[in-house]
Length: 147
Image (cartoon, rainbow, N blue to C red; front, side, top):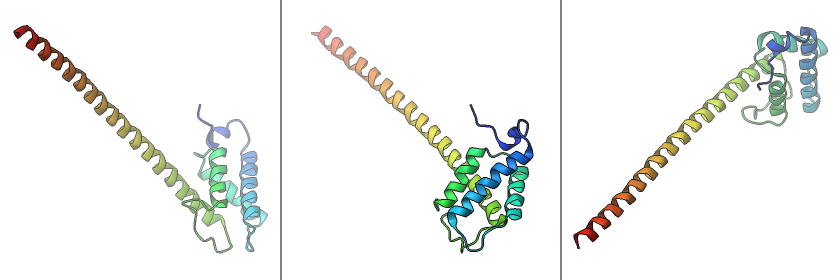
C-alpha cells in the first residue's frame, strides 16, 4: 500500500497541521546544519506552506528522506551550501530530489526490463539445450538401430 501524499493527507488533517509538520522538518534541518544565516520562524512557515501547497505529491516520509539527504550531504545534495539555506534553495532542492527519485525509479524499471529480457533469453537457451539433448538421444538411438 502506498503512503498517502500531502494532497491526500489534506482530506484527513488540516492544512495548518501539515504546515506545522513540514515546518518542524525544516527546523530540524536548520538545527542540524547550524547555519550562521538561518531562516526565521516566518520564513520557515512560509517555506512549509509553499511545500504543502505546491509540492503536494510528496509524502511526509519522502520529505523526511529529502531533508535527511540534505543533512547527510548525499547526492544530489552534496554541494556547498555556503553556510546558508533559504526557501529558494529548499524549493530548488525539492525539484532536484523529484528528478533524482524519478530517474532512480526509471532506472529500476529499465533494470527490471533488462532482467526479464535476460531471463527470457536464458529460457530460450535452456529450451534449445533440452531440444539439443533430445536430438542427441534421437541420433544415438538411430545409430543403434542401424547396427
